[in-house]
Image (tube, rainbow, N blue to C red):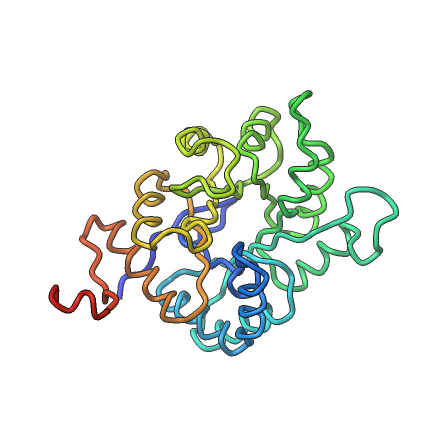
Amino acid sequence: MDEFPRTTVGGQSISRMIIGTNWFLGYSHTSAAKDKFIKSYQTRERLADIITVFLERGVDAIMGMPVPMLRDAIHDAEDRVGRPVYTILTPHVNMLPGGPPETEPEVVFDQCKAMGATFCFPHSCIVDALVDRLHGVIRDIDRYTSLVRERDMIPGLSTHLPVTMSIADKTGADVETYIQLYNAVGFLMPIEVDWAMRLIHAAKKPVMTIKPMAAGRLHPLVGFTFVWNTLRDQDMVTVGTTTADEARECIDISMDLLSRRMPDYELQATRSKRELM
């Protein structure tokens, strides 16, 4: 069975597909009811089943938060398959003095290292608050990247603002990659899709794109056809799934598209399509 194509970020080889975790941890971008369903449905065993499917096909990177259930599920999948998962953590940290002691940057980055993170980027809610568009700088970014480097993790920027990549490149920020929104309908994106595409292509570092299916608003075939045909070979796509079967479908569709093959997967069977069969 074919292994998923790979890229290199900060000297580390990882798969171009990244396992997303919003559909593991309860962030549906749909409704409170959907979030509640995800949280009630997912267990350590179910998460390990999904991660195992990805890992068996060479998708060996995962993006998320430092959550114990996720950590344990990753370890379970690694034990089953016998190969490592490269973890990309996007934690929340205090930006100002006087915050909760447990979210001081040093404490949080220590936790990420203990969880086995290869990459560590403050979440976009932190980074985007530090972007100073007037002066063209990302305030305090050197402090965070230094703390990440000191713990032998690879720093990057998680952002929902395309301008963050441009500012980081212009100022020489010590980062190896960027997390950036990218999908065919512009879901959550602050600028037009074609502008986002141009900025990703201009970025000096590989880009980890997120929301390729617009949090379920796009059919997988449509979402993947767009991203895999408009990104560079070094860029990545983060894919969230709820079940192991969804993981298999996403991998198979993506592999066919990347190989310039007609995607061949089981279609949905409904009564209205009976005469088409």
